[in-house]
Amino acid sequence: MNCRGLIVELSSYLDGELDAQGIREMEIHLARCKNCRIIVDTTRKTIEIYCQTEPVPLPADFAARLHEALARRLGRKPSH
Ligand SMILES: [Zn+2]
Image (cartoon, rainbow, N blue to C red; front, side):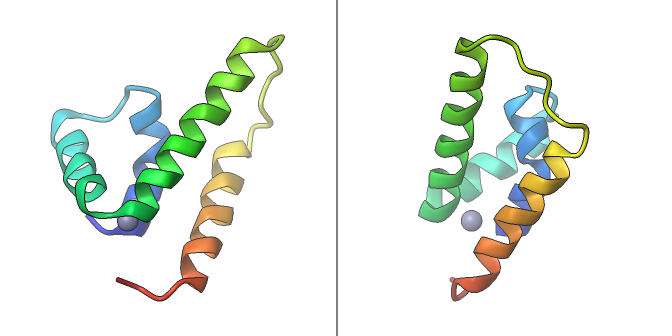
């Protein structure tokens, strides 16, 4: 799994919907990729903050926009 693959699977991972193989691939990648650890930590914290405030429905395209924004951000950095 590379950084883009991780971002594609990220929402499933955080929702607990990823299968065992996907989780394993993601954890292997996270173990060696600091950028993606930061992305996962930040996204998880953001979701926790949302959950502690009053329920606000996320826009239907939230996941797509998140993925797009993260992909853009990763795209600017040199690959590793
Ligand atoms: Zn990565």
